[in-house]
Image (cartoon, rainbow, N blue to C red; front, top):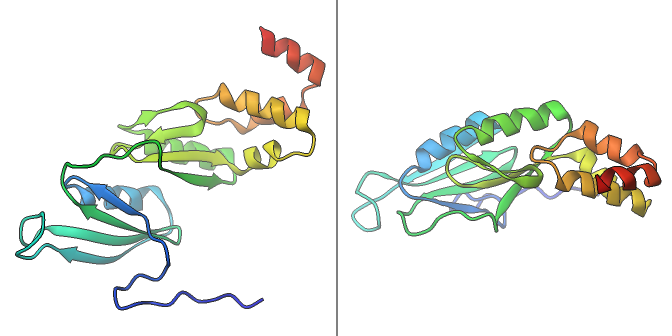
Length: 180
């Protein structure tokens, strides 16, 4: 099967869907922060306000950037809208070390939440998820998947060893431990 190459349009946008992240007036700071968190990053384009618009002439209006190949648009739109946990970005982590790294960076000056969720210092929500969790909860062994899910629901930052321990537990033993 031949992969389709993304087509660059007149706007420079190369993908059909691009999340637009609305910031008060700190899009530059946010993009710099996100580019420090992820390894494969690129600022693609910066647009500035002219005479018309919500911002001061010459100030940054939008920044088009990539994180790990995913394009985003950061917009300095003013204080009208805030991020909510109803929209989040899931980070697929191969190892516990990767989970720990993203968790530490994104939670600094942010807000940690249950089940691997963190709101960064700008209020944007992320799910820092070990790939192993997805493999375990999709197990054909329903009891095993249930034990893993129950363990995950008790965690703040997700812990691969704890998930593996729940997966390996004997059902009767795990049920007793769960009641304590």
